[in-house]
Amino acid sequence: MDAFLTSRPIGDLLSGIVGGTVIGLVALSLVLIWRATHILNFAQGAMAMFATYIGMTRLQHRLTVNVIGIHFTVHFNYWWCVAISILAGLAIGGITERVLVRPLYGKPEINPIVVMVGYLALLEALAGAIWGTIPITIQTPFSFIDWQLGGKTVLLSPNDVYRVVATLVVAIVIALLFRFTNLGLQLRASAVAPEVSRLLGVRVGRMLTIGWILASGVGAVAAVILTSSSFQQPLQPPVMEAPFAIAFIAAAIGGLESPTGALVAGIAFGVMEQFVTDYLNSNYVLLIALGALILVLMIRPQGLFSKRVVRRV
Amino acid sequence: MIRIAGLSVSYGAVQALRDVTFDAPSGTVTAVIGANGAGKTTLLRSISGTVRPVAGEIDLDGTRLIGKRPENIARLGVGHVPEGRGVIEEFTVEENLRLGALHGKQKLQAGLDDQFDLFPVLGERRRQAAGTLSGGERQMLAMARALIAKPSVLLLDEPSLGLAPIVTADLMRTIKELCEDRKLTVILVEQDAMSALRVSERAVVLHVGRVAADDRSEVVAADENLKHYYLGMTQ
Image (cartoon, rainbow over all chains, first blue to last red; front, side):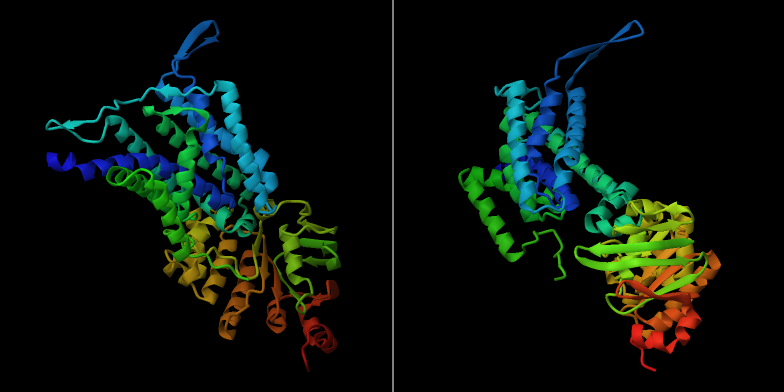
């Protein structure tokens, strides 16, 4: 058993799953917005990066509050900062939808693309202006030293387990919300049948805002767990560019209408990346990913997990 | 009661409704009939707020509906079953009904029980995707989804479209019973004028966006000129 767990393929598989979780979460956030508003949010990664800066730069800070003469001191540890990042992500999603996106509904499809690309550049420039461009290393909440079994290394650390568990928790919470709550029912209805939903009393505009808020929160979790990896991925303005590009490919392969597809494709991409890097060469990773994308778009344009959309003409 | 006064609607240069005025009394079925393009669907969409009129008033028991959003009009008790039924095909029968009940006036379980009593086939298919239902079952689901919110007004747009005559007859009987039992105000838009006239107390005949007749249904049904010139029915 020890030999199995410490073998090279299992090590690649474990590392791939850990690496794929962030891609899967970013892809999930893209899909949530696409399903709600049919907008490809090119600023998704930048929004997540900005939210992470807001929270994680509080690390080690102290805040003293005076309440009726009694001083309370809050010491911002890692978990406080995670909470602030996620709250910032939720707020950024809501503000973005209300201020930038809402005026674009019903406009030509190119308009939101241009605005979102501009917004991406704006957020990265703003982050650089506020927090600087020097990479910030964030402490890992758990040890990043891989476990040992029988004197051999398993390519898995407590911090890796944290990343996978955090991803699963987010995915399960989102799935439960959409499947079993009245809010989820209204979010799904607003996405697939906005006019009918309005006739049933659903406030569709509010649901679209909530969709953006949720997606942006998921993106913030992705950015937090990506940058909570010690020196591997320090926080800097362009930190989410590469994961976003890969997540975009994963979302298209999994199917832009399918949250499950996005998550599975993201994790599969992480595993593929690990095996290709280990057995071939990391230069082939993007080549294989783009090849897979072209193949899927040719054979099954709606993606592997989305149902075929039939439009009446 | 729904009171419509001087209602005009335009789609760009095309005027779909011109100075339409009539009342739909509480607890009655008011049929709106007319040829294709007469403005029947536009009239219902104006009442439910999905179309913005350029002039006129629509009052529901003294509450002005013009300028209100569709979701707010629905919450005031106006149920609209649109043309083509509008069931959400990806949702199960029960999810469609849950959505209808969210902003209604009764508890979900009581509402579901009511609707499954009224349309037993929906109870049998509650876990089935709405996209797999037959045309008649979809129409029942669309009506049940509107009724589960306990509306005071029900707008029905071409409920018999694509249904077999025997299913249409059942449906018309159900509409009549609902109106009598629940004191619903029903505005029924129908291509099948004779079915609509049989089930309704009052009838409004629309012709190219104008009211050509507004009278008791039996009077309209007996007027051969009206039937010939406006409804395309031969003697």
